[in-house]
Length: 187
Image (tube, rainbow, N blue to C red):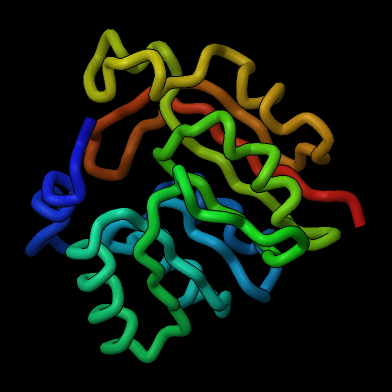
């Protein structure tokens, strides 16, 4: 199990990186209100949402990652609010967010809390690794990868607006096997 010091070391002194392509694809569909960025790290996705006019509560376990995010958000005068927390004990308030964005973090037990945490008409963006990824790279632990169509099951009760599974090719030529979805809580 990784400690906070391990996560801080992974995030210290590094730029935020490029936002996930699926987020950029669907960002016009995200409500312009308050969003929760789950496991935000250095804020690559939180910054992209804030630049698009969304206020973002960015939650992560890494203090170093959130310090970097806060500095970048301040420099650009973006509405990003970093919160250091462990999702094992972090409580998502019911009906609190217009959007919840969960990229590359997989805790299946959180999905009911995500659905409850959305305001009516709010959206959940979930994008993470498929089991196929184990054969090609990181991660390799099946606990951190979805089975085929498992994401559909995790989104039960929400209206699926976009869904795809397969190989994602990034602008730099790298690739990853991913499941991506955008789902809405009924109005």
